[in-house]
Amino acid sequence: MKERMMQETMIETTVNYTIEYQGQLYLIEQVPARVCQETGEEYFSPETVEHIHALIKSGRPPARVIGTPVYRYA
Image 1 (cartoon, one colour):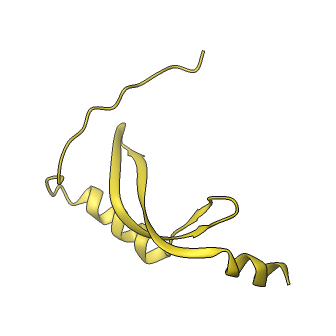
Image 2: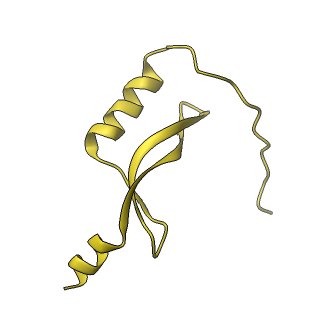
C-alpha cells in the first residue's frame, strides 16, 4: 500500500543536477527525473545517470559557464 501511495505522489519532470568530478563542479540542466511531490526527493534512471557521466567525460564544450560562490560551513 505504501508503495502505491509513493507512486501516486511522483511526477515526471526535468530538474537541474549538480555533480563534482575531479575537483570541478558541474551543473546539468533539464535532466529528466521522477520527483516525489511530498519530499522533493529526485529519482534518476540508470540510463540518465550514465548519460550525465558520459557528457561530463566527453570533453564537449558546455552550453554556458557560470561562476559559483564557495563558502565554508564554519
